[in-house]
Structures are given as structure tokens and as C-alpha cells.
Length: 123
Image (cartoon, rainbow, N blue to C red):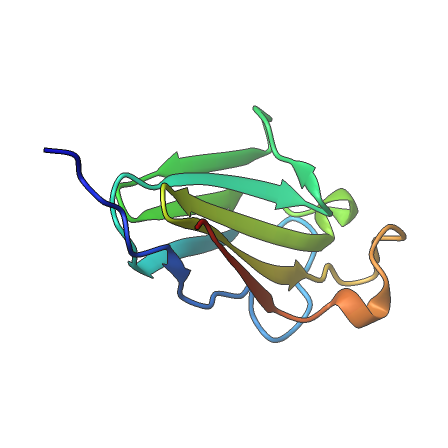
């Protein structure tokens, strides 16, 4: 019997906090899916570029969540972080800004520095 996927992922909101972070501190966010059929696939973007293997950023995958940790925040980490959660029924994106005290990311317009969520459903 073929399993029918009907519930696409729904990401719970997350943030790096309401104020700018100081250089040198650690930062962690968790992208959790509150609903959606398993299996789920997670990926992360920084300023719309996929985050691959890096020494300064660690991604921990779990069944219904993914945690991103930056060991020592610097100006290069400033910008928008997007969690992508996908299953056979659809994909959802949630974006949160990371503001580092004294730094900005020239690739990210100021109007983009707000949490956003975008959902796509597969027919």
C-alpha cells in the first residue's frame, strides 16, 4: 500500500534574539517543524547561499528539527539565516536575521531584516 503524504511542513518561528550580538559570543537557533509528515529534510541558507560544511558553523539534524550553532560570532556571520524544511507534500522556509554589533551584511537590504515564512505545497 502506497503512503499518501498530505501534510506539508510548518516551521515554528525562531530568532537569534531581539538585540545585536557581540562578536565572539556563540549563537544557536533551532528550526522545529510543528506539523508535517515524516521523513523531513532540513537545510540552511545564509543570505540565500546554502551552508555547507564549515569549521565555524555546526548543524545538528534531528527527526523534527535542525539546530544551527555558531561557535564564535563575527561580522561575516551577519545577515539572514533561512531554515528549509521539506517533505513529499511541500516545502517551507523561515528566515531570521542575525545582527552582529558593529557589522552589517551588504548583501542584505535593511527591509529584509525581519523574520519571514514562505510555504510551498506540492500538488
